[in-house]
Length: 467
Image (tube, rainbow, N blue to C red; front, side):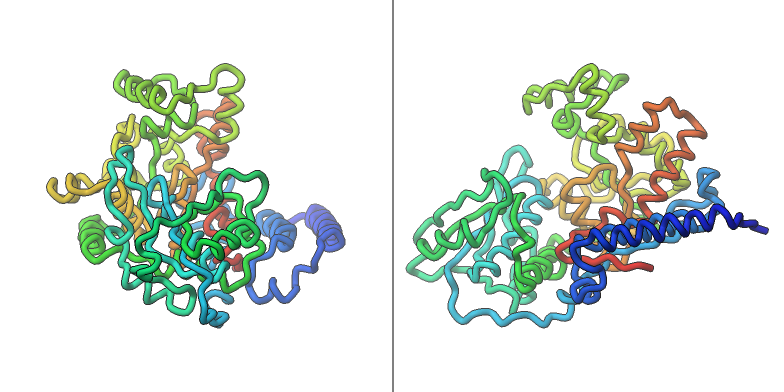
């Protein structure tokens, strides 16, 4: 029998009521405005979300919370989920204007998921500026071992069909423009938030054909709903793999024993070099690989107090051994089938495989000819496809792929998704916690993250729903 003390509960009630009054008085808008009710994301709802989670986490009864978890993390009841917003899914969009202001090409750089993110942003920008979208330009980079373009990865005809009514897309330009190169409009090197209507529309109207790489600091708060809807439609409904690649992805998915966990592990030499973190105890081969990567990226590791602060801020990628420890703290069985969604060159992988032995990779499941013929983008596309269809997904980082995968899983109603806390791990180990104490503390940190559904989706397309 569980016995409650009246006095502590009364104190919690009084404190919570006081907080509610304070948040209500300080909020610029009441939380039950039309936008909030209709499911449109609102920053002003955040204090109430905090208060709701505060109360729920106090009152929620979970006998495993203090014991380190006799059940796995997926058994914990969630209080909040991300789902596609109603204003987007209902499809009542403003009709496209009859006349276009010009043509926009989105130039995309980096890995596949970064290029996907930029392209999705570019779709929203094209609709915002009443422009016609032409096929994007994907970077051809020797660094990524990449030569494939947009149509090599994605189904072009399906994309055009799905974007009908959201934004106009063309395969070819009119004859009077087709012979010209687009005028490049710089959107990146700006101070403060970037506004496309003020800064890009004049160039579009003047030159009629421009190319852009979307700015990270763009002012999406000024987007009308029809521009936001175009972005959401492009990212989560209109982009599917090209038929040959989709067949290969389906074949790979069928080969993985079910059920399975997709684990996105980031501990490649270039990742460690970019992080500027130090890792004592690496093998000689790993040390050599990291030193070569550091020389290439020209970013030296932090030392002394700066290194300690950097790590405690959660900037350092988890090693395979640290990842295995956290998985154990979450009561993920060592017999779990794990698909390793990762790039080439993972270091210290034995730290994971010595504990979790049912590990599957692209190279182990595909025949050698299929695997060696693939480039960076197509390999990344396979990892993405497997991860959005896995029974559960865990990421050791919070990069472009992780954000895209988590959002698509939310779109599909798959909520066994979790980001491991690098900051939490660093803070707990710096306190000297070891063994059982560390395992219990890691359980608590990740339990709160999972219950709250943090970091699972993009706010432009998804809204929070209380369960």
